[in-house]
Amino acid sequence: MKTEELHDIAIALRTARKGRTPIAAPTKTWPALDADDALRVQQINVDHAVNHGDRLVGYKLGNIAKVMQDAFGLDQPDYGFLLASTFIYEGTTLALNQYIRPYVELEPAFILRGPLRGPNVTVADVINAIDYAIPAIEIIDSRVQNWAIDLPDTLADNGSTGAVILGGTPRRLTELNLRDTRGTLHFNGREVMSGNTGNVLGNPLSAVAWLVNRLAAYDVGLSPGQVILPGSCLQAIPMDKAGHWSCTFENWGTIEFDVV
Image (cartoon, rainbow, N blue to C red; front, side, top):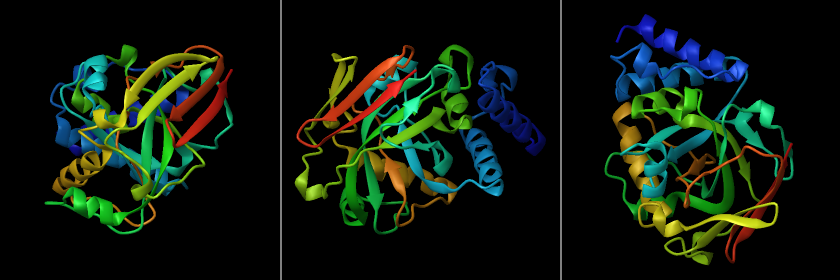
């Protein structure tokens, strides 16, 4: 696609995010948009954010668990940049009117102490590069009407990023069993969804290796200190009502927040 068209798509998505008004899927308006062009759109908007005072702090992987792919009609993962402006403090009260059609996900987050750059990164490389893990909530929110997305649409929309909440219970990898840790979402005291970290490509460390090797095709690597979200361990739940969320990894930690 022409550079001018990619900038048009970037502006349309940026405007939708700012005004919290969804648009038709970019692939409907610009049928030639493919995954590679969509990543260029993603990078245009991230560069715009950084040039206006934001900061790149990590990367995310989404829809890698089959339950997530089934929920949103995708057959492969998406990925996106994490910007500092999207991070929210634990315990903060969120307002529904700040989002379009948000969903809540529970996943581990990894903080890097060393760099990671593909291709040919292994799970052992990932383990050696991680400093610690913490429970995290990702609130995903699409700028596309009714979440009617194909892969290029969500990639252009920066992996449908909304917000990130990091918990307060950091653990070394040797203290965790990321192959088999149960996670649950509770809303107003009632369990609404459960899953297991094993749903994330066998374990979330494998998902990070997949992400790093995929990003290598675009000459993107991960740096020390960055936050990496490997994807949700359970099916995302709509955040469409006011109330209290409590999100827990068994024998690890809980993140709580309110919605109004």
